[in-house]
Image (spheres, rainbow, N blue to C red):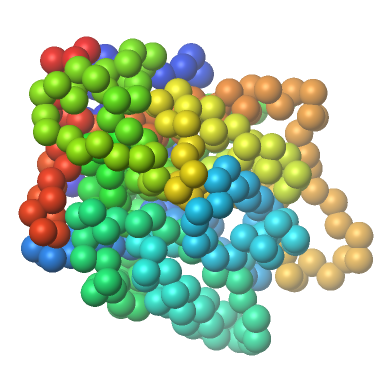
Amino acid sequence: MGRQRKIEDYGVRIGSLPKGRLNKITDVTGVRVGHCTIDTQENKTGVTVILPSRENIFTNKLVAASWVLNGFGKAQGLVQIDELGTLETPIALTNTLNIGVVHDALVEYMVGECEKEGVEITSVNPVVGENNDSFLNNIRSRAVRKEHVFEAIESACEDFEEGDVGAGKGVSCHLLKGGIGSASRVVRYGGTDYVIGALVQTNLGLLEDLVVGGKLVGPAIAERISSEKALERGSIMIIIGTDLPLSSRQLRRLCKRACVGIARCGSYIGHGSGDIVIGFSTGNVIRDSDEREIRSIRVLDDSKIDLAFRAVAESVEEAVLNSMITAGKVTGYRGHVRESLADHIGEVL
């Protein structure tokens, strides 16, 4: 894969904090992302999997949290995350009607991983998010299968592709082509650099509201293309990953700030939108091998957390724009078309 042009390559600078090496969630050490894309005349869909650790995450759980901005969504696994504050499987993204198949595949994957280590699983909490990609994809055919989930896992790497790939193949963002996008920021605490990264699956927003780098560009693009009138009824899945040592409560506070990044791109989070944030930190690992009754974790001083809030807001805003700018024009189910932001950004900026 050649280097993709991202929003910064068009002269758009988001925020003021330094970016990570790849400007992706995988700038957090140990994190990898993989896709499996289904691209036929009838189906534009797929699976994207975020592997937060190179260790067996079931026996080496990560501190985690979630936050629901608007609950018109079908994400699985949030109840246990909110109760226990830990993540014990990879996070998978797909389309709305295939969420059960992907859940089942993650169970099978984790059972297999634990069997390799002689660990018996009798309960596991797969985490699966979704967007409704039915405008470009015949969602009722439920094209995603278990093998697609395993293919996404096997393809996982650090320098992953963005745009209309994996779970982002069939989604729309501000009535243009959406997809998978990512960005990261580096923050410094106690003389040490930490990374806060975001990955998004974007399927929300109206064209007339689209803002790029603080400039309202949607109306100008709307004049150039044929776009239907619509309600704000899409969705977005946002994954926040960091190596900053945080408690589950602090991670939840970071998750809440994701709404700043969405709003800066012009979405007001409509009634029919499933806007869900999941966060994890590799800075604290809860190991099953640790048999102490009292355990210690490191946490950030709450009075210093504003810098991390800023990093989340900047990362999410840029990740949304990257999901659009890296996605090409797609003609999908029933001849429906979504234009690429890349084809119009030069004129409107």
